[in-house]
Image (tube, rainbow, N blue to C red; front, side):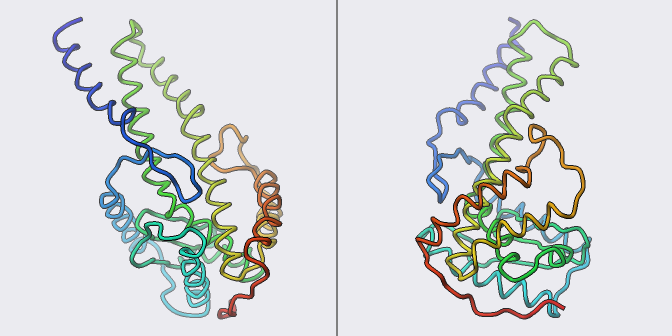
Length: 270
């Protein structure tokens, strides 16, 4: 092995060691996770991306839709301590409604959440919106962004190490190996994140006073929109049927834990 190759290998091993030796943390659900990027860095990345998205898209700063989403969001985030105790959470949640017809929502590290106006047309009531916002809050609380970032760094290091240690020089083969890592590791892990966020959102919405049955009802609405979903193996999200089944299976448990509560009404959608 050449001196340059030897030094490169030593450097990569030093970079890889934290991924294997660092102590695991736990998500609010008790699942072990490895999230090595400093939270301050992730928050800054989230803030910067959210600011850029607000500059590029049209944000509804006022009006019935914005008021409704803000109201539901407050009720969801106020339930965090009851459900998960003193877990680390943003000092201030930032929620914005984007004038976008696509029925979508997203969460960024640091507590930055975006809701598309098109999603409000798919949701039949406040409880269904609460299911989506609870899901996005779950992503933030479970530090899924940090975990994915850590995972991507680990996959890249692993691919480079494989290239250095093997006799295979084919760039095409390494690209194929990268696809294997994506399908075998990254995408299934993302689906696990989605399932965990679904469950966290179900607990948060029920504790906040929203009917948990509406979580599954919302995904039935999404399924009714049609459109072809990618095969589950190649999707970062569970398919609608699996999602509905998982949520439905947990409704009795969350009802037993929180009882039947009633959230204060929020401003009706236009």
